Image (tube, rainbow, N blue to C red; front, side, top):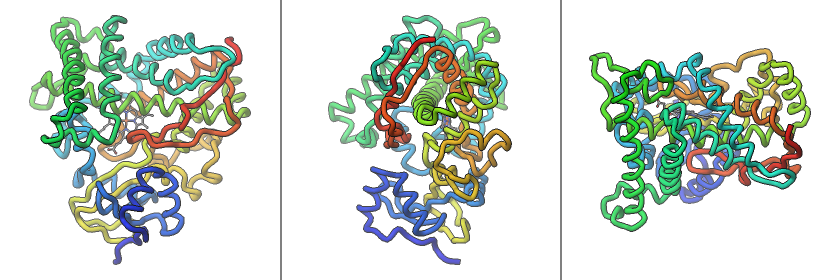
Length: 431
Ligand code: HEM
């Protein structure tokens, strides 16, 4: 067996192209080299991109053997902390995942419908009429409020505002690539990192106050929020999560669930408002309380604009993928975007056509916006419900049109692919 074909460019050129425009990079080299190809990148090192369902299945089903790609800890460690589910490995990861999955179970999510609808109504009230505005910041406000209420359980509006400010500041401060320096002791003395420490201390103070309050609450069973369930949950040996770990998981759920869902909503509106027939059909079905098309809209949006376009694993054992031999130590990137747009699975793959999901559920390894294996997104049902309720609430309240006939261009924002101008729309009239 041979090694996969390599991108024939000098390392700096490969790195730059992948960093700046990951989608054209991945598409171009898939077209030239096939579904399994090798790139040499500063940072992750020797990387193999895979996208066929067979390879994706093979890599996700080896999650208990391999580890997450190295860069994740470096970039996210200082913010999320060592307990974070996103950063844990092996047995420790599985122990925590077992504890954290039940509160995110699909059926349980219905408890949050009202919270989502209320947060959406509040955002929509602030929109101007007849002048262009970007939807993305509004979607961020909705998903932040939803996390603070549904996950953190903060009911008091003033406390929520205070926490929002502190969390938005720290997320903003960690959004740039310079954050990588956070763990380098020498660099940490620079003012930018002292600011990070200050912001983190402030956010932690507020998070620990919430955790303390929940611990003192005598009626945790009567509460719906996920933090209460995590406080009450027990590991197999009967122990509970420490306050430090609860803090790390709250920060993780915020980071993993806030920007991702907001961006997915912004993309869905960009797609819908440029397909007026799909929008009309959706509105007609919502009129008669039919939600099948809405579900298809959400799934198709996540297919064609996957917010997280790839996810990495480091091989701890040599493996065979796509007919090639990969050495131990190779980083494999499951190219979510490429998998979701394979013409073999989706005719006319770049078109937004919710109809394709009306008959058949998508195949497990051909539709992977939430990743797979034992690291698959635990918030998938939460995100899909949140998207459905927010879209329905918006379409019932206002009539929107796209401000430009051109759809948005994807740009990279941290680990997500985001609409370049934030989905600029015009509110034509309130219903
Ligand atoms: C549209 C919205 C979302 C997208 C596209 C998304 C995508 C993903 C992906 C691709 C992964 C897998 C990463 C990997 O392979 O290692 C992941 C993991 C994760 N997601 Fe999401 N996510 C979304 C919303 C959420 C929400 C709402 C939450 C929680 C409130 C959440 C919490 C998590 C957590 C905790 C993990 C780590 C799971 C583990 O390592 O065991 N996500 N997400």
